[in-house]
Length: 234
Ligand SMILES: Nc1ncnc2c1ncn2[C@@H]1O[C@H](COP(=O)(O)OP(=O)(O)OP(=O)(O)O)[C@@H](O)[C@H]1O
Ligand SMILES: [Mg+2]
Image (cartoon, rainbow, N blue to C red):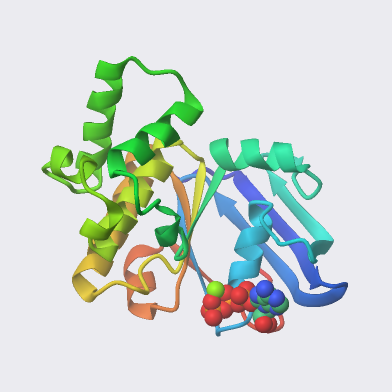
């Protein structure tokens, strides 16, 4: 069920690089439990906006106007420590480069365990069971095989699904997926998008899908936000 109160409101946002406004007039709302797509021409500011929403703009970037309001709290001015907590608990950002974020010389199991332990302490049997159920949820029927693998032994689509499993394990309220399927072939693209849709339903997860892929957007998103060089107002 989609709630009638916005979980996140972005109001007239302006983001600048070295004091020069790069992205302007960004306004939209996200409601709990919906999958919203943002689409628009290359360079219009989709990724920069996504990074601003999780406090991951680089040093030279700044939100210079407007507000981001999460659950009635203005989040523009969080400090680094607060953003870290926010990213762990509230909004996760999945970017294409996260694929490189998997450590090449450590098994999937080691990396997943590390992520799970960030959130809570685990007894080893429970941890093992949870890992298996997470991997089942993202479509792996033989979790042990995956857990003992190194990233290079897996395809791009498989790695993407593992990253999704890791993000889901953090139980964020909003997942922003920035072009999650561009590097994938048609079959894996379907798999990842179907999975996102399933996660949206199973966990009431709010998903912001940034994509150029009009066909997928039409098929999977509840709503589409059109962005262009002048911004977006809705
Ligand atoms: N690291 C950077 N340094 C300077 N300018 C940047 C940087 N990253 C992005 N920009 C500029 O910010 C603007 C918005 O870029 P952004 O990456 O958000 O676009 P996008 O909508 O995500 O495009 P795409 O669809 O190609 O991913 C562009 O004009 C781009 O040139
Ligand atoms: Mg982008």
